[in-house]
Length: 349
Image (cartoon, rainbow, N blue to C red; front, top):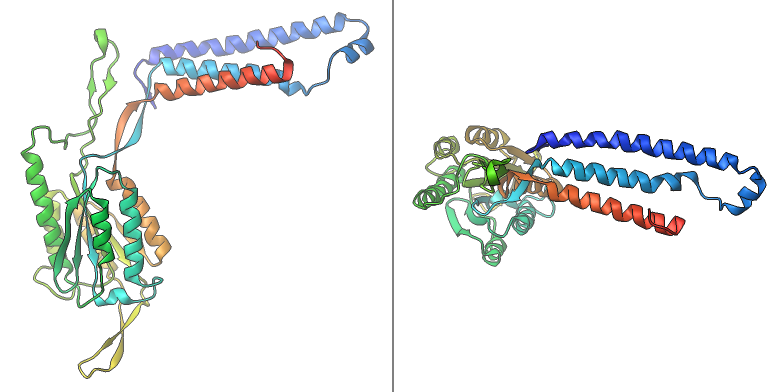
């Protein structure tokens, strides 16, 4: 926490003075009680109450004063703020290995459910696109804020064929490049570096603006459960292009090393194939592009991964003044202190 007017924190020196005054008042009260010589009669006249009750309202008032004094110094904090300019492109693996059941109920069903929850939790202004890939990549939905369209696309996913991971990433990056070009043509494009400060009234302390920090305009999330098996582009070549474009790719390796799936061979016989996720390649893609690699061996961990990604791509960190919060705390403490004093002692201080 930082302060726009730190010199006003000197007002907190009033707190120890108030404590000293309160202690002196308590000693004076005790001496007055001793002068009342008939102690038995005093015990009958004075109702017995826990001693801590007498001190709690003043403690709350002191807390309120401290909160209000800190508020005068105009504290600022870095807080998460929903983004209005972000685009997230989901690259969803729908190869045949997504039928594996090592992630319950199947890898594809778990991926669909987690993606639906992720989309629901994003700020409404964040646009989402979906590219599915098996033997060929398919753009199911261009980036949009229409949640119903996105959910319909996820519901249509079906497992099939091989894994063209590199080609899918190139298609994602084609979309990202178009968005970046459109943003460059917009006069008030918001890819500005970090929050700035503008002068306050009469040359006073500066106040933070609401300009978003310079996070990437477009980010991609690649969910895959296997190695690249087909296509014209190697995944790491696509990652190099993503780095040049400034598009971070967050990768999710779905499944366990023991995952298997049954397929028919050329003779029509069912055979069991091992389908472990290619964690090494996904790790390299994330490191190359400035993203983060996650492992999701269970449906629960996949949901947790998406929760983490929501804060990374759906929100930006901005410096904002939080005086209002401290004022609210101060007023709440005053009300609590007054209420306790009225209920316990039948008077307001």
